[in-house]
Every structure is written in C-alpha cells, then in structure tokens.
View (tube, rainbow, N blue to C red):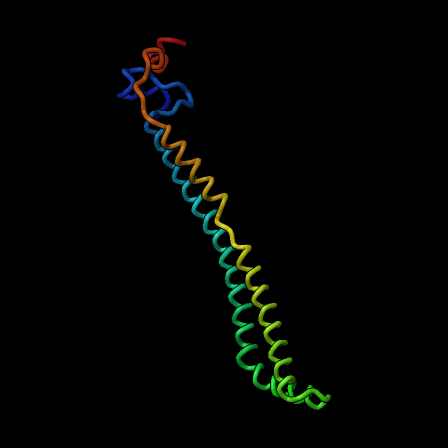
Length: 158
C-alpha cells in the first residue's frame, strides 16, 4: 500500500511509516513458524543420520566377526590344532586350545560391536527444540484486545 493511503480496516487512519498491518504481521509469524519447524526437522535428520552411521559401523563389525568365524575357523582350526599336536600335546587337547582361542576372538569382536551400538543416542537437541516450540504454541492463545491497546492502535494515545 502506498505511503499515506488509508487502510480500509483502520477506520480511515493512515499507517505510520514502516508500520505493518495485522495481515503482514500474521504472514511474518507464519513464515517464521514454518522456518522453525523446517529447521527442527533438518536438525533431527542430521542427528539421526549421525547415529545411523554409528549403527552401520557396528553392523559392519558384526558382519566382519561373522565372516571370520564362518570362513577362517575350519581351516585355521585344523592347521593350528595339528601344529600344537606337533609340539607334543595330544590331538584332542590341541583342538580344544584352538577352539578356546577362537571363542576369545569372537568375544572381543562382540565387545567392539557392543561399544559401537552403545554410542547411539536419541536426537536430544531436536527433541528439546520441538518441546520448547510446543510449549510456546500451547501458551500462545489469542485474547481480546484491551481498550488501551485499541486506543493505541487507532492513534488516540501516543
């Protein structure tokens, strides 16, 4: 609206320079709220993406542990058991020593995978921001304007 033109909803009063109408204020508030929600969603995505990467890392550790157990155990077990048997231990005890060593390795790999999964956290900042926004929106209720606010808006009170 050009400066000096009367706004039909303002009872013939010309707006002050730089003054915004209620519609403009509402549009600005809506745009700000929309931007806030989009920013909170982006923050949540970033935090979840980081935790998904940690989860993938733990999953890869488990996959590596399973691969070692499935493909290496039979060949290395036999070779190690026969090697220990060649040192003078009976064949039965040689296989038992090798099996214990592989169980120890599996436990170690399992502990490493558990540590990776333990680092996964919920998106604290995004949850906190969403709760604060919800709290503000809960408490932001329209109320009727007081007579003083009406008079100020109409320019009766400086």
